Image (cartoon, rainbow, N blue to C red; front, side, top):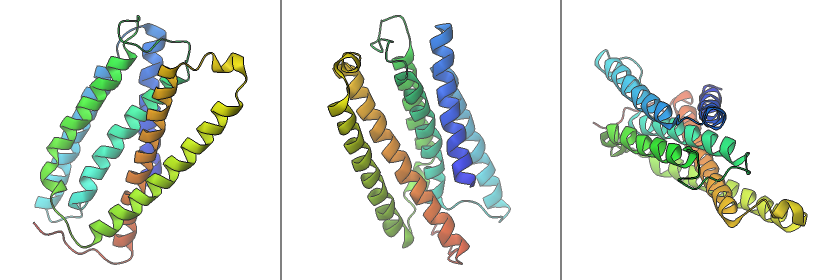
Length: 206
């Protein structure tokens, strides 16, 4: 439930930023980018404090997954809300900053990820199995989404197809890929939580 609420919040925030930009004409990507970096810095300090006080903290791989979840959910929410307005030209220089906003948040995600690069290198015997489980779930979801989208493209009436330019279709496919990656991260986070709840709470090697 914690993961679902967290992902839902990231998606809603990303969508809200996109809608705000659409209705005001102002760039909001910097808000998402700075917010993500500020949140990453805050939780890093919190987790360091918990580690110093010998209290419970997420394992090293989980920390990077939480950051990826926040950033990926933010970007996916922004992209999904943007693509719902297919009448808007998303090309750079067409009177809106939606594309630039997405790139700003992606850059912020990369910087936030760098904050936890040391944690990413810490592994234990659970990681390979959990990562494989997540990748499998992500590929299955991507296959299902692409199959459904293919049927939609095949059966859409000609007037509707005229709205779906190659550029829009390409962006929709990117959104589906991002969604499948988010599923992969969620499955991996859930797997770590399940392993801890089942009593396998072995300390990560430092």
